[in-house]
Image (cartoon, rainbow, N blue to C red):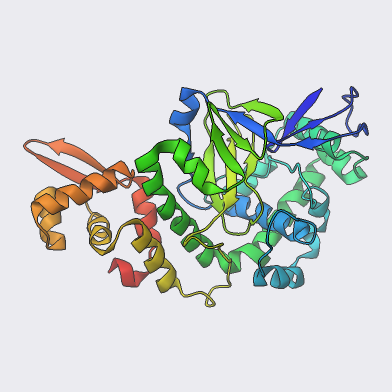
Length: 366
């Protein structure tokens, strides 16, 4: 029987009870897309604190075991080991060095408190099913604490919430400035690709181990399949993750399907540096230039307030024809929206455009 969890499929024995110990084999997933799935596939508009927290924990536990490519020296791993909170130690059993990993902690909310409330409200049925699937893939018997969590025990679930919050506060929050900068930098590199080549070309640029083939997305092979059910998938570049792309396949309703991958804002792996250790002005300049160039960057900044083409041209001190052409490119990249008002048009930032402008260093937005 096939069991799917966290973007991996494993072959388990016929025993459906929690804690079954039959032989398992992790295989690589193929995710099939319908036209509706492609229409609903999009980038997350901002980094999600809880997603980055879970990936930081997974990266931390797996750094010594992973052999999926050249390992880069990551200063934050050494610092994180020293700062790791004791309250989070129970989570090491859930976020082990090898997947599959839980999806009920993958809230994509931009607000940490809201995301943790989402975890706290996980239905018992979801916990039981997901944790049973995980241990079918891993083999062995889970601890008493995990079995209590699978039964929906409030104290066990609160242990998860407390551990995630403390990991975030100790490891993720001090590096959030670089997380935000690298997240938007990676998106800035991807958006022109999406605008020019569509999803097929975009997927091929994310990672060498990810390939679009016919009607689906493969990760290093085609031994199992999963369908998205028309819900699409959310693309999330992660600053803390350095491994292969990870499919977080939820139920498509309460928990979105996600594709999480290692961010590369300037073509190089991101490094989640402590605030004050990174050159935010240079990072912002690099990824803005990669996407826009100086004139188009000025056009985007000028649209912090809606403007007509003539007003935009005056604000940036370019011709109306040039302003119109730059607006067209930004519109195709889903960074601005253009609506007709009488005989003229009015340009304004989309949520993604506002997000990128809002995170740029002051030196670039003034």
